[in-house]
Length: 234
Image (cartoon, rainbow, N blue to C red; front, top):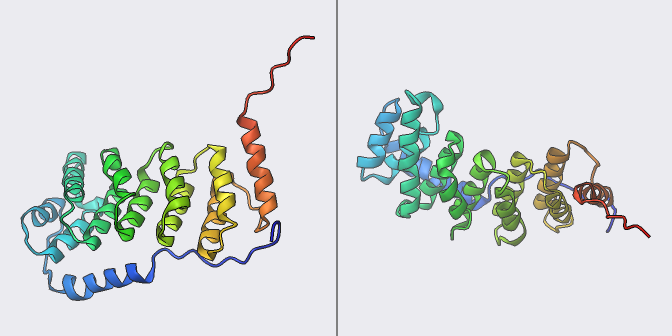
């Protein structure tokens, strides 16, 4: 198989289980939520005061819209509320996932600590969305965490999300390229496809599906970062 073209399929962004959870929330919950307002102030009030989990889910989701905020201080307040809710661990899986998506959309560094922790949470749906959010607001240092998720997580969706997040971060560390090359050898076609797309993103090249060509490029980039051998005088 080495060096051969491997069949790829489009990356699957969410598993059937994730889609079913979101569908249940939309059908059974959000239909009876009612009018929540149009501003961040109203959404935050519902989040903090409502006992209805469907209302809170909808409000957390609406807080992702940047146009609902009057100023940056209000975004800071919202991020604090979102982080506290995620750390509290009392919200449903669907709502925790929604919070992660909203934190990613708000793109504020104050959320990094909780997202890094949540990327290793128990539920794979929540981990998946935390990884996606890290791809949007993370730092280059988060590439190590995402690479760990990519190679060790038991959930395919989490691994794909971590791979795609690496593409968003575009780390310069050439070791990430080698990890992605190994991803192209994975028996799961979704992981192969995601690894291929991310390699294109971080290298700016398209070498097709031939693994050996990507491996050569990854090693070449690794060697460029290593200091030259010190020549000693005879």
